[in-house]
Image 1 (cartoon, rainbow, N blue to C red):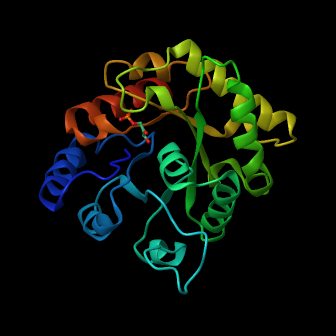
Image 2: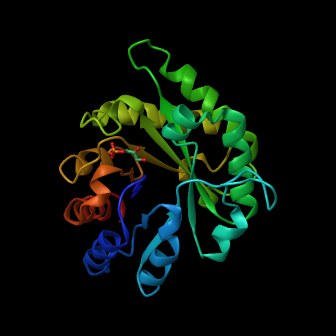
Amino acid sequence: GNWKMNGRQANNEALLSALKPAVAGFDTIDVAVCPPFPYLSQTASQLADSNITFGAQNLSAQQDGAYTGEVSSGMLVDLKVRWVLVGHSERRSLYGETDEIVAAKTQVALDAGLIPCIGETLEERKTGDTEVVLARQLDAVLPVIERHPASAFVLAYEPVWAIGTGLTATPEQAQAVHAFLRDRLASSGYAAAPSVRILYGGSVKAANAPELFSQPDVDGGLVGGASLVANEFVGIAKAAVDSLGA
Ligand code: 13P
């Protein structure tokens, strides 16, 4: 669950309190929440006795130093953060993160033992350059990730037109793109390509999750809006257990 810039202490606490017992038995999948930086500490203590793990939404490509407003990998490690979102489309489009920055952040995360969830963005399906954009974004991080086992990172495919719009890629569209990404990993010589987890993001809901997760190359979801609603997020996690947890 990517909470983005939403929530305050009180609702975060209520949300986590509702999620903890509801997903307590979901041991065959990874359930994670990514709160805003100021709430990581609160999340860490609230989830200390839970199977829910947590991540950050961003990290600096630098270590310590004169980088006002940035948060380093070492700080995230201090807070027992497990995952970190890198290259989300909102970081790319609103904060100018280039493929080079995404690759640098991926490297820093891997070096720190954090598991980067690397966003691949499809800007325009209509123009027909889907594969060109995705290939460019994937190729930028390939030299960084290919030296690591498949368990060290996660890929996320999020078509921009599906993020926060209520429009979801059809299961067939998601499957086609995920297969493309996996094939490209394999053809570039990454032997563990079949084990790489590729998440779909973009208006995932409890209602559409079962169909999406039943696609062979869809290995889970990166959920925005629905991760702020306990019942929805639990429903999505349940769909993951049913389709993927076997
Ligand atoms: P929505 O689920 O709100 O469409 O957001 C998707 C997303 O960007 C998750 O990172």
